[in-house]
Amino acid sequence: MSPAPAEPTTALGRPDQGLTPHLGRPRNPELDDAAMRAAIKLIAEDGYPALTMERIAVRASVSRAALYRRWPNKLELVVNAIEAFAGSRTNLPDTGRLRDDVVEFLFALIRHRSADIETYEGLVSAAMGDPELGARCGEILMVRFADSFRTLVTRAVDRGELPAGTDIDLLATVGPALALYRAKTTGKRLDEEYVDRMANQFFNPAAASTAPASPATGAPGTGPAAPGTGSTGSGSASAPQ
Image (cartoon, rainbow, N blue to C red; front, side, top):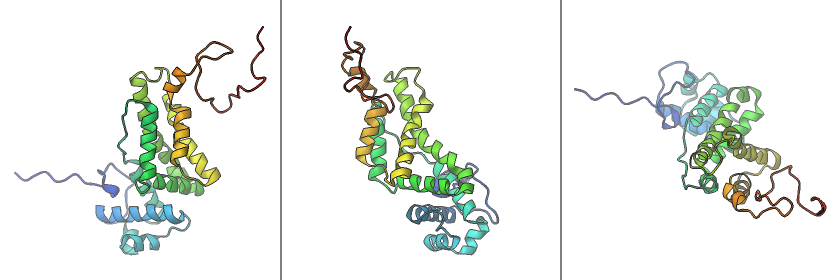
């Protein structure tokens, strides 16, 4: 009995799960992979406006005719590349502590830039800069990054590190939102110092539970003050009665 045929794969080496259909001849996974990787790298290097089908063809070492048999234009090619990228999954740490999970996850991306973080930032920037691409793919990208945080936060709730009533969806968007805001307002990418600050402020329930009691209320401290909560400087607390 002959062996079963191998499962079809798509660009970036994942099983075919129904990405946006191509035009023309049946897909060649190797060509698809080369073209999509080339497009993503070019976007990360020079931005979406500078991307052309000719530049993709040169970088991927394929002919323009081969690209146009599969995609009518660069938009459709990049949409497929983003769909494939969003379908990928990164191995997430499971240290037993939320703060350490978040730090290890982001440090790994920073130290291996080619893996995810530059790609994510470049594609998000492209989606935000082009209305049509943003309408097609902006939400896909934000959901992809937030899904990793959602997994880490869900684990923390399951093991009792965070309360059962934690708003997991809201907390899962904090990391992606801060990373995007930093990139758009300062032009800076995530670095280890910023990741430490983020993790200590938003993903460190142990610090909140062990903080000393508040002198004014006698209640347990809450760790570093969240943005918008004000300070505890002179004149901020009521005088003893």
